[in-house]
Structures are given as C-alpha cells and as structure tokens.
Length: 613
Image 1 (cartoon, rainbow, N blue to C red):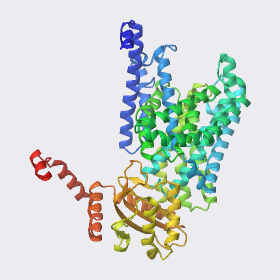
Image 2 (image 1 turned 90 degrees about the vertical axis):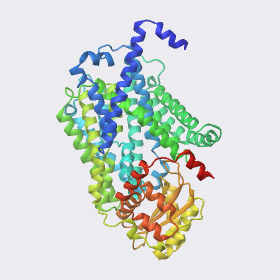
Image 3 (image 1 turned 60 degrees about the vertical axis):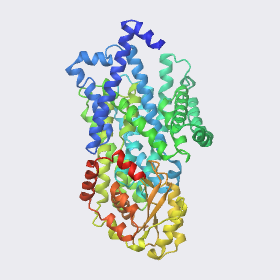
Image 4 (image 1 turned 60 degrees about the horizontal axis):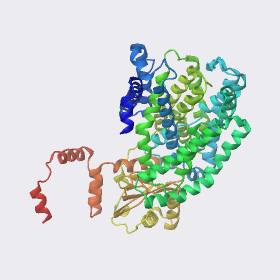
C-alpha cells in the first residue's frame, strides 16, 4: 500500500510512465491473444496471429494511421524512456520463459534411443541448409541485406548466424503439429521429434559461438563492466560448454533428486512451478553473465528439468499453458512493434531465405531418411516435419537484430520464412503420407480383441495382459509382444488424455496389424498430459515394414474415442456387443444426445434428496 500511495503522489511523470507501461503491455497481450485464437480456429499456428498483432500495433499500421497513439503507447521517439526500458525487460523475460518451454520439450532419452536414424536426419537436416546459408552470407552478403555498419571481424559471426537461422527447427511448433495429426507418439513422430531435439541443441550451441564472437567487440566498445564477455572468445566458449556439461550432468541429477521432495512437501502445482522458474532464471542469469544471451541458459535449464521423469506430464502441461498463454503472445506481439514491415521488406532476401529454408531443410532430411532406409513417403513426411522454423527462427532473429548483427530487412525475411515453413509443415506431412482411412476401428475388432476387465494396476501389468490376449491373434509368443510394447512404453508414455492410452509397437514378422482393447475400472497411470488415469487401453501392434499403418491406426483410435459420450458408453458396456454398439454410435446421434443433455434442467433439491435416500 505504501508503494501505491508513493506512486500516486509522485507526480504526473511517474504516473505517466506506469500508465504507458500498463497500456502497452495490455495492448500487445490483448491483440496478440485475440489474433492467436483466431489463427488457431482456422487451423493455423497461434504465432501467425501473434506476429500479426505486432504488425498492426507497430509503425507498419498503427504508426502510419495514428502516429500520436503509437508514440504514446510505445515511446518510439524516446529511446531512454522508462516505459520502453521496462517493457524491453519484460519482453526479455518472456523470451527467457519461452525457451524454458522449448527446453522442456527436449527428451534426451528419447533422442538417444532413436539411434542413427534420428542422428542422421538431424545432421544432414542441419548441415545442408547451414552450408547453403553460410555460403550465401559469406560470399554474397549483399543479397541478404547485410548491415552497412557491420564490423569486418563480425563477418564470420554473420555467416554462421545465417546458416543457423535457416537450419534450426521450432521444437514447440513441430510437437504441436504432430499432436494435432495424432502421430506425436507414433514411431515416425518420435523420429521427427528426436531429430528436432538434436537439431535444436546443435543450433543453440552454434548461436552461443556467434554470441561469443561478437560479445568481446561489443564489450570493448561499451566498456562492459561485470560481464564474462571481456574474457575473450576462448574463455567465453569454455565457460559456456562448461555450463552445458555441468547443468546436464550434476545439475540434472540434483534436480531429479529435489523434485520428489518438492512434490511431497510443497503445494501442487505452485511449488513445482516456482522451483522450475527459479532454476530457469538462475541459469539464464549465469549465461548472461558469461557473455551468452540469457535465453540460452533458460533452454539448457529446461532440458535438464524436463529430462526428469519426476516432472509429471500434467505439470509440464500447466507450465506450458501458463507461459504460452501470457508470455508467448507478449514476445511475438512485441516483435512488429518496433519494425516497419513495409519499408523493411526486401524481396531478394525473402526469396533466398525461403529457398534455403524449404529446399535445404526438406531435401537434407529426405535424403537422410532415405539413407536410414525409410520409404519415400515417410522420408518426405520427415522432411516436411523438420521444416517448421517458426518460433526458434523468430527468436534467433530478434536476438541478432538487437545485437545489430543483421538488418531489419533480413529479420523480416526470417520471420516470413518461419511462418511459411510452419504453415506448410502439417499439410506437407499429410500430403506425403497420402492417408486413406477406408476402415473404422470396429472393422478390426471381434470379441477376441476385447478384454472387459483388466486386472493390472500399472502400465507394465496391463501391457502384459493385453499381450497375452494378442498372442494367439498374432500367432506369436506373448512374451515377445510384451517386451516390444513395454520397451516402446519406456521410451515415451502413451497416455493420450481423457482416460485413453495406446501402448504400441512395430513387430518384425507380423503379417497384419492387431488392436486389442481393454477396460480398467480402477484406471491405470500412463502419465497422460491431463493427469487422468487411463480406463480405456488399446494395445496396437503393427508390422515393422509398414510404418504408415501405425500412423493411421493411432489416428483411428484417437478419433474413435474422442467423443465423451462414446467413452462413457464404452466404460459402461458389460458385454462385447454393447462395447461394439458404443463404437458404432453415429457422431450425429452423439452430438444430438449431448445437446439434449445440456438442455435438460438440473435436478431440484427435492429430487436430489430422494435419490440420496
């Protein structure tokens, strides 16, 4: 209360500064959220609407139509204004927390278990576009609108940055696309995610090198005090890689040990979220002190925290939703606030960046997948899946622009490439796989594929039960089926949310796909994103040489049980015929019943008393 009273009495200048800050944040967040929601409604990534919000609020539109309003909100002509300084700090915090989310998406164990296929896709998928971008930036920098004031000794940093910008992937967007297509937990989805994880790790380490190359020059000019950049490139890189190794070994071990204690004695999810944020900010502060940007520390912290299996999927989802709902719109919405996209549009730079981002990335990943003996259609799907650059490209570009390493023209080209690759990725995967779903789930089932009452209380026991039922249908030993499915479950939990889990495996020698459905009245914890135990568990077994079957069936199962009324009827079924009837219940009829249920009046107090009696 004393602080509020002080501010109110401090004079018009102080009140103006606070008013401008609050209004500018409210404008960015409100418009970015609104347009992000509209973009998602039309099946597009929310970043499209959030970036559009910045263009609307920035000099491109608002500044051209109503310059006084734009100047008031964002203090465009007053570089040292307190509102601008605080807003910039808030934007930096938003970017830092965004990279925490990206780091939490990284599952090192999944990446390592995918083996040489993921490594090869990651290497060629990054090396080919990186080489193309580096060569253009090194030999023909004018085509990329190189800044006029770029120091000669920054030329290498500029070329490395361009190579990274056109070859990095947007891990959060890729994950969202794969989830929307219901192939996130399929083997093809895991291959794409694993390669993207390795790609991002290499990309951010490369960006650390870029920052190390330019930081000593910046410090020399500005007379840096207290940063690590003055130690020189060698020391900065040594400290950076020392931080990475220490965080991903001892730090990861300590976090893994501390999480159970916090979950046991702290409030959920507040205590865990606070712990995650504190660790992230400490790591971000350390890398900023070293001379590498704070967001790199946040990314590595996210990797270390996310690699602990003690961090529940529901907690990850809570953190992700909180940051994506507030801080992501503020960051992406703020990007266009200070750039005129009309005057900074350079068609040559845009075309070159687009050609490299699409041709180099998709081509490199396709070639790597073919070398890994994937079929042509799946290889092309891998290429499109890895192409999405969205968030990461924009964040890298913003950092480079802040350091005056790139021009506004190249930054606009990077934004356009990030949006274009993200928009094309999902449709490209679908077109590559050329899915045709003639059959429905009931067509694959008989009473021999149904287990009305599962006795297992954990995933391992339930998978064993279902494997025993599947063995005579597959004409293969139950133990082999169980080991394959359990090995796959350990790589990534298969809880899909809403009480559904789909443990699955691709089996060598299997002639045709098999689905066995079981019901658990008590529920089994498959670590679903919504934290709900699975009560409908489908064991999916597909031939090793037919990865498309697994993708189609995973999507088929997800669609079969997506309606809550159908799930309720399946759980209530006592016999196989009732279960089958529930599966075949038409979608239109289910929607009609839901509307009827919503229109029914709730029970009166007297009726509730009678039922209680």
